Image 1 (spheres, rainbow, N blue to C red):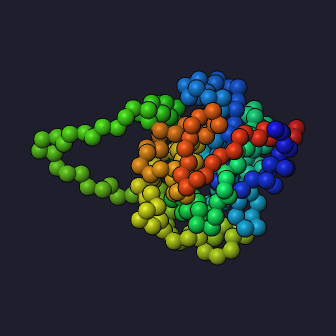
Image 2 (cartoon, rainbow, N blue to C red):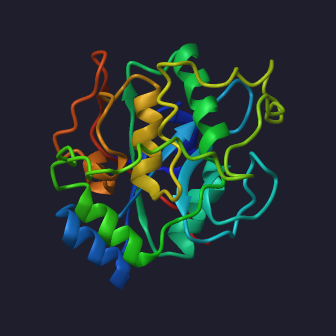
Image 3 (spheres, helix red, strand yellow):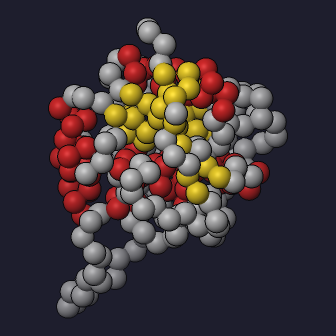
Amino acid sequence: MSISLDEAVELTRTGDVWVFRGRSVPDRAIQFTTNSPVNHVGMAVVLDDMPPLMWHAELGRSLPDLWTGTHQRGVQLHDLRDAVCVWAERYGQRAWLRQLEPPAGPAMEDAVLRTVARLDGTPFPSTAQLAWRWLRGRVPAFPRPALRGRVPAFPRPALRGRVPAFPRPALPGRRGPVPAPPAPGDVPDRLLETAYCAEVVAVTYEAMGLLPPGRRPNWYDPGRFWSGDDLDLEAGATLGAEIEVRIPPG
């Protein structure tokens, strides 16, 4: 199935997944190591009368982040149509849409906004960090024995400027205030020092109640969100088959 970009933007809803496939050497490396045909993933955020947005992480800063209003690298919230065009025209990527069923409700949308408030602006990992984190995500976690005489560790304070202050101002066109800070069950420990695209979508899905809690974010890669992988969602939710999106010439 194939639809135009305008049709896809009109069709997309909060929680829908957008996957991308490129032909560059880094793209091929990601596809090879994850054994999937895709190398990037983002999530649609569609709220009230706002234009559809793309929630993802990337190294570039060609588009303004709509949460902060600045150009930045790392975790970003972009105009969805503009983001897809950048990935198609600048990075040479093909795009597909996978729709979430049933559609996300108000509680899930609030969880998305809380996650955006926590993660927006988180840096993108270096290539070496990205490879190492991906490998660690595939090794089962075993409890480490306590070192003899080791003083118990205390929680590290949040880095200044890393975690946005609450409450944040509402996004343009968003009715009502941004939801309150994360509740106890709202995965507050998912504040990553760096984050790549699949981790951002996975942590957001976990906050929405769509993925089981407790799994390490680096277990996820873009291929996990491709239909060829067996990603079991919670609460009876499913992701539909890929719909190819035709990008108009730039």
